[in-house]
Length: 94
Image (cartoon, rainbow, N blue to C red):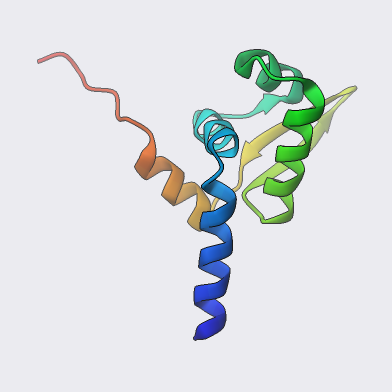
């Protein structure tokens, strides 16, 4: 039981970093390649790649190769559920 809390706390620490949270929320809408992510965030590619590596190690994102591109997406699971709770819902016009 204590292990469950440690695992949950570790996941929350990873998502608690503002840049990683922005990446995760952005990926909640679908997959994106590294270049698209760092251009959107206005951050250096190396910084974004380091954060994606941490997120991948914690099972938050997954990746696939598409030729020379590496595309990332939010991995289904607890982290995806947390991120989707944080994403503002689109309100339809009345």
